[in-house]
Amino acid sequence: MSLNDGNWFTEVCDEAGTAFSLRVTRQLHTERSRYQTIEVYETSHFGNLLVLDGFVMLTARDNFIYHEMMSHPALYTHPQPKRVLVIGGGDCGCLAEVLRHGDVIAAELVELDERVTRVSEQFFPELCASNNDPRASLHFTDGVAWVAQADAGTYDIIIVDSTDPIGQAARLFQEPFYASCRRALGDAGVLVVQSESPLIHCALIHSMRAEMGKAGFQRVSTLHFPQCTYPSGWWSATLAGGERPHAEFRAADAQAKIFTTRYYNADMHRAALAQPTFMQER
Amino acid sequence: MSLNDGNWFTEVCDEAGTAFSLRVTRQLHTERSRYQTIEVYETSHFGNLLVLDGFVMLTARDNFIYHEMMSHPALYTHPQPKRVLVIGGGDCGCLAEVLRHGDVIAAELVELDERVTRVSEQFFPELCASNNDPRASLHFTDGVAWVAQADAGTYDIIIVDSTDPIGQAARLFQEPFYASCRRALGDAGVLVVQSESPLIHCALIHSMRAEMGKAGFQRVSTLHFPQCTYPSGWWSATLAGGERPHAEFRAADAQAKIFTTRYYNADMHRAALAQPTFMQER
Image 1 (cartoon, rainbow over the protein chains, first blue to last red):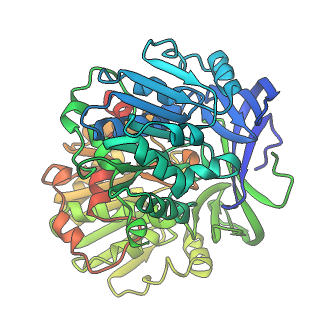
Image 2: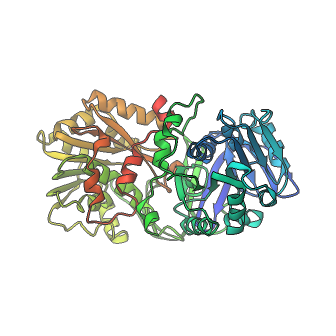
């Protein structure tokens, strides 16, 4: 079958020889910001679609899995997460999940491109509904420099919600940045970084884990979850730090949480920590 | 980006408004069998690709996840699986996984279309390497009638490795077939049926679970796993029957198994049983 019937947005993943397409009903927005091309489409079945430089960032339908899994496992790994930093994540989906935790007293978002946030406020208001929470602050600047300049022990949690490891984002997958994160985190601090597809980017995941180890993180775990609109449909986040083995997260608190989630729960948290045999062997 | 550069095989999923494409280097085979169009392509990154009536059946690269998860959880749920029936599964990948279990004394494959198996023997010899195992027997006939005619208690395990619930395969998702399976299974017997995408086909999964309940299966669990080349990249299998709660599978035996797997292990088995919140709520 071909895509000649109707309008489609297609993202080619060259390193996997695959492509993923969403049927679009119209383009809602396009602009060239200082950093990148930002597009928004209305799709037939996945709600609005945000695209940066031709890569799918999120859809209204399936982003909940990614945002919940980038946030809640890290926050339930820390004994009492009060101060949270989100690097990247300009769509504000991670920030919204973080602010659901009553323990959090301050959540800072540091995104390079303010336009991503402004466009998200317009086309994904459900992700930005907490941006005016008095605990939230948004900063539009370079996240790597921000963490390098932070006082030691400033944060309990650092969430790195970045694009793929190319261009500016490549630094977010390397030891110097992880060393800054370790310094900026308190002793019980937890770092979580989006870490691409276990099937396609297995080598990258292992390189990140090694870089985190070199930066002084003794505990490193990779979480697995579906992400239907990213290459291979299977995604990961890598967790580093914490005072106890990652399997000993606050499961009772996760079970008793008073806010609602659609994917995350204590069982799914535990399940996401299981490693396929081919990942264990590497 | 468009798919104008190079040759691609594309499968459109109309009910989700998505499409998935694999870059192909050449077509290795095409034929119209009595039942369907069978095609094989060589892809750039996923090895050989088997396509039936335009739908991706498997690729050499990622079928291990599906075949392991369709087989080992069911076999480790039964106390001692000796007699196994595979319905569909003409590529023989499930049969090969079943035959890795030393307890199995007889494994029957009942596939409607003999040509699927013959084409698989030619282009996916790694999946068919156990077809001459003296415990294996292949029958090319209708699986629904086969089970309906089987003596009560003939099988310990029935694996339904079917195509999507359209045409002939629709019967494999309905109560009368499940009632036949229940009769053909011994008291400890376990049925496992491929059950499509949790994101796209959630309603179908719940309908199947209800049909299994009506057929007299008291224990029903849905297993989740990635399947990168199927729509949404996220797939499921639904397990029914058994003597004990499905969480109480033979984990010690799974941990001590002497054959190798690439995805499956006791932790991944447990993880696959966890249900996302949106599935629990339904």
